[in-house]
Image (cartoon, rainbow, N blue to C red; front, side, top):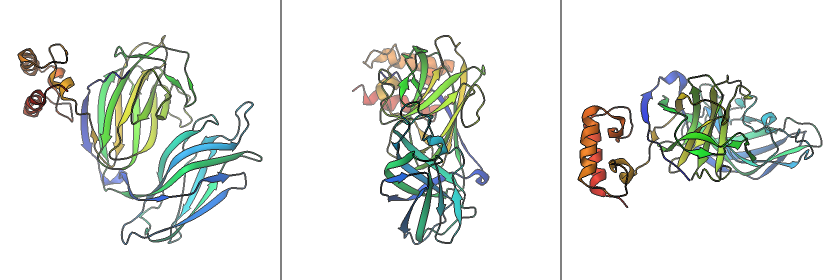
Length: 351
């Protein structure tokens, strides 16, 4: 089951040159099948104001007609779209855009920029789909929602450090459709929510430069069921289709306010050495950690009960500058806000 690790986070507000993309409109869309000849769709938007710099799709990627014998087609990595705004400006997905090397059904939540200074949202939008594959293979999207994206004016960058050795053992996923046989391995997990719906970039860099893996779960995370709620991942073994080097795991994802996410940074195999890592999330909103008064105030040692021994443990840790006293989010500094947080959590008691 989930073993939570509290980590030190630093939040930095970036410059407008790399502005975060937030969701300003969401449009429910029909399911679409995309043969080799492609497919198209159109929709109307009326917002009254705004400037659109990007586009996103959430849903489920699937393969209605696929090579089931050896899985060579269609590949989701070849899938792409071109979106035309009411003023005639266009934006096209990078290549590869999203993907898994398999033909498994899996969730997509990906966005991209490309409308330059911005397009007016109001009017008729059109979208062209390219499967990237030849006949007879057919790609498809299910439970589709389109999202119009607007620059916030600045990125918010959240960075934290940790180590892959946490004492949490699991058999990690191997891509979306299966579980790796290289474990059990150790992992670190960050539970969080976001303050703004939009596109977020994830990057995990292993200090040793060795192989590792990071992946994102949505709604809940159970290490005994590693394929349940798995939403995206980034290879850290040097063979990522997105050209990230060995020791770096990265991916982009559309995240929503009010939804809980879990970013898992994992040891690659049981033979790999443990290593420190630096993880960074960049997006239009802040990363907010979990609220768990019992875990935060129950220090001496964690027992499920709060008493004076926990008060004494907090005072000792606070005076020593020990990380266990750093309980006020965002983490990274031990100050009076941690005292206030401890008092509030202590008075709230354990559930």
